[in-house]
Each structure stands twice: as C-alpha cells, then as structure tokens.
Length: 225
Image 1 (cartoon, rainbow, N blue to C red):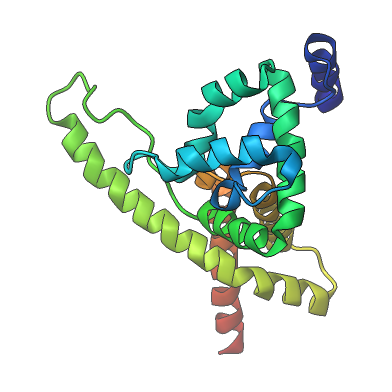
Image 2: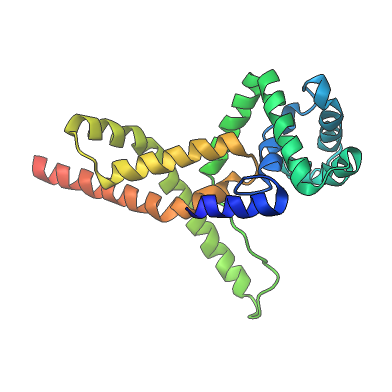
C-alpha cells in the first residue's frame, strides 16, 4: 500500500506512476560499460554517456558517470528530470537488448559488490582529538569480521536450501537465505554503483543466520559423539 500510495503521489506530480523518478538513471548505470552500443534512436544519449565515461576523473567511481553526464543530457534533450529519467529507462532497455551478454556481466559485478562492506563517515570531523584514529582501527576490524561472515553466509546458502528440502522444514536460516539472496539478485538487475549499501538492511539477518548455522553444526557434532 505504501508503494502504491507513493507511486500515485509521483504520478500526480511528475506524470509517471513509479516509486522513484530516479529509475531511469539507476538502470542506465548498468549500461555504463557499453553505453555507446545502442540503437540509432538513442545514439545521442549513448555517445554523451560514453564520452563522460571515457573522460572521467580517475578517482571517481565509473558507476556515477551518468550523473556527471546529466547536465549535458538535459541540455541535449531539453527534457525535465522526470522526462529524462523516463527517456533513459527506454534507452537502457534498448541498449540492454542490444548487449545481453555485457549486461549480464555487469549484473554479476553488481551482485558481487552487494556482498562487500563499506565505511561511510567523515574522518576529519571528530570533535575529540585522535578519536578518529582509534575508531578507524575498530571499524576496519569490524569490516574484516563482517566480510568473513558475509562470505560464510554465501557458502551456507546452498547448504540451507538443500537442508530445507531434505528435511522438508522451513528454518530461520532458510528463510533468511532466500530473502537476502533474492534481494542481492534483484538489486543487481536494476542498478550499479556502491551496491554494498543495499546489503546494509540485511546485515543483522546475515549475522544471525551464520550464528544459527554455527550453533546447529555444533549441536549436531555434540549429538554425534
């Protein structure tokens, strides 16, 4: 209901029934590595997009290229933000159809990045002197631990699915595995760029699932003794 309600609000204000007016830009991010390989109808968009990709500053993430190209795309097309987003959606669909293999390769990269860990903070803006240095090491240790847990979770996904099928039982680990894995696939098809942010809402579930798996394996070994 919330999704439909917000989509209706966007429809009234922008003319498009969608949950976000960014959808065209988001999907276009998945086309960044083959932006110019599009249909004749979208050559102008593809060429501008590719120009910014090839001329981008090295320290900027390639996935953000579409936003660097936005001012010129807006000027070239004469479209408002919602209309340009819709145009980019159509461009993306056409370009993906022209490059299915390249798109699937990009989807894999987005899926892989989902499982990474990220640290977002302003290192130089701590009020207490040297507190940032201490917290930096703590955060790095937490990131390493969380990354290991995420790797363990991925490895345990097929185990949880196979175990659920064999035992004909829906365990918390199976439920979490299906939910998180499905989310990792869906987000990869939709956008590219700092995909690890999409795993953040699931991190507590991922940790919980791995802990439950460890406890189950430990209890099983005790019973087998």
